[in-house]
Image (cartoon, rainbow, N blue to C red; front, top):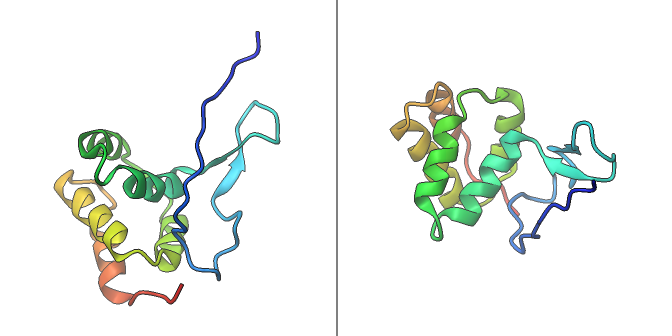
Length: 117
């Protein structure tokens, strides 16, 4: 039986042009290689961008369940994310949820100014 996955495209550019467009995008494991999805670290930022106003409780539940992230991947994405509100919401939620990675996200954001789009 073939499964059908619903998907949408987001119209807002989250990252500056220096980040390769395919960074943090990979083939879905054990599926057709053309089916590409965001890695968890990129999905976090996409989720925050998409849900800040529409579903803050859903966003909180997903982030609360995410206990581990790959620091180098998330740091690179944060470095290229030019939306200050998304970066701040992520840092705030990670802190409120006592995520193990919250402190280094906050330090990273404090140490790095916004990059130009």
